[in-house]
Image (cartoon, rainbow, N blue to C red):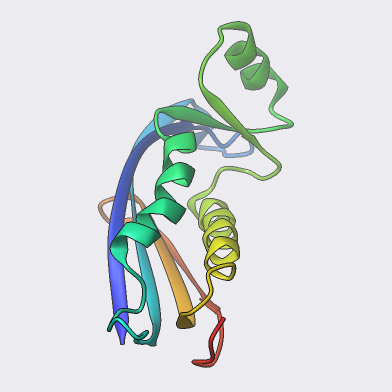
Length: 146
């Protein structure tokens, strides 16, 4: 069985290594699909959507309307700090692939701390535009209670 829930947020970033337009500061309306496969618990759920929200929404709130900045991008980092702008500093270039890797780490770590569920896989798919996305799947277990 599989369940899925979508989340949305607005976020700015830039790719300082890029040779094209993405070198400039810009933003996206991100959409993320979080899919969890597994067996049903005693209540007939893989996970309650309310519980999933308690895991995912705090992550999204940190990034929503923030500028995602590679920690070594001194020009932009200094500007954001000096102007007291909402920012998230990361140790990676803010490609959708790296954002997807970061989010699957955060979400899977929190899922693995929940007891009484038979999770098997987690898939995170992040769209940075309606037709461009990155997707990653992580094995969480083989149907055993975590």
